[in-house]
Length: 200
View 1 (cartoon, rainbow, N blue to C red):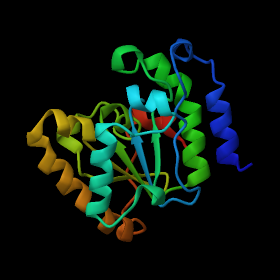
View 2: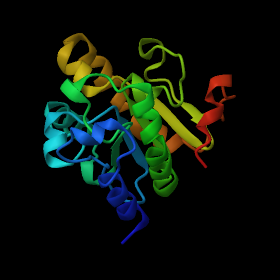
View 3: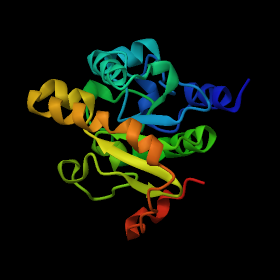
View 4: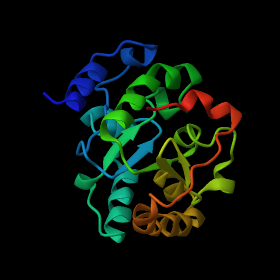
């Protein structure tokens, strides 16, 4: 069993916060252990909770389309969420839930060591862009600890607000270029609040 598989098994047994009581299945995340790109969403929804897999509902279909638009397949990237169990009624994750799951996501980042981390939505964006507004920073990469973080709107937001769809598609199109340039992107000075971010 690989370290990622062992971690997934640990996530499936997790009882660190009350969300485990309402889940059908935990959603550890999936993808190759050497993925160059990791997408981090917010939390599992209904379909994810049923299947134990990330991004399998409508937002997941849109993510698959977005990946295809830049010549990538889901199987080539690692997909995870900030929290691994579905919040009741798909409400926003609570700070203590995010904190309870943080070690799992930290460990996934350590094991996969992606060159590019694409944050989908404001909860995953907050790891690298604390206190920022997604409307201000989407599409603007920032390198922290040797990893390029690239904030995008969540695909679900583009499904609810068609005006965001073009923005999401445009931000997605920059990913191949960012991957090529990852080594050249300068390290960002960390904002004071990002000190707890140390991933490695």
